[in-house]
Length: 323
Image (cartoon, rainbow, N blue to C red; front, side):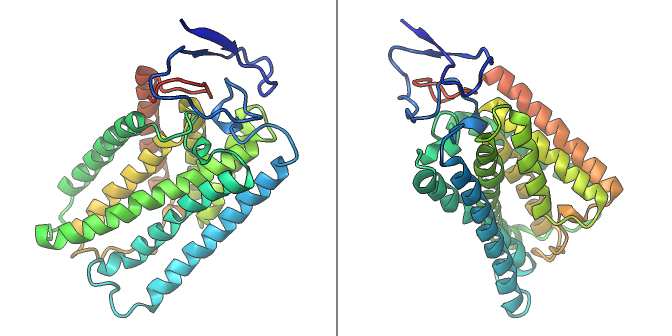
């Protein structure tokens, strides 16, 4: 017999959210954490009050700064490499090192959550205190299908020459793995640690969403006003999606899928990876920025529709199954 628990604890007064706890959890309980009330939304999982809220804000900034140092260092290493870079990656070496450096965010974020904020590291991963594998899997299926379809349309409309499986398989495998790891690290910093750090100060989600989006946009150092507007809008959208799905899995899937699809094009149709890698989303001009934003908005809307169908847990609720 299930019992209904009001979302008390004062974390979100007047929210009216209630949570249901089965008598026999199907997948084990989410960790009970002092200061985090049952019914709390994802951005409040670092706790909403107490002496440590300034500590977590400072820790988030230090992690971001440390990560940016690593990213900058990876580009310096790439410039020191002889010739065209590493033999396997060639012209994509700098991009691979960039994503691997961003992947170092993963342990940094979890260490900060566990040892600085004194909470289970899993509370950065979702309201369930863990990666919800089924939900992440469906998000990856949807986003990969979308972006690989766009990549196929791009290829069919162009005149690039396929480099062949021998030249494609090795570089693509190495670079795609780096892209996935780096995308997860970047999302856990911005849609994870920093979103929750801001959530310590604001019970409502929008201030936290805006703060992480501004910081994410600044990280790309946009050189064009259209690029800045595009990145800010996407950062806001991904922050909103993270809170409304109970974790950053959908944002990770979006980031990884669009990176992998770009990798397919970069490796398969430019002589084993000789595509330019010095341009980023921060360099988009008006036309490409608008297209990029519209395509991203469409897949985010599709992810939200998927969430409405699969109904992943969206609040901190003890004992709900992993979905």
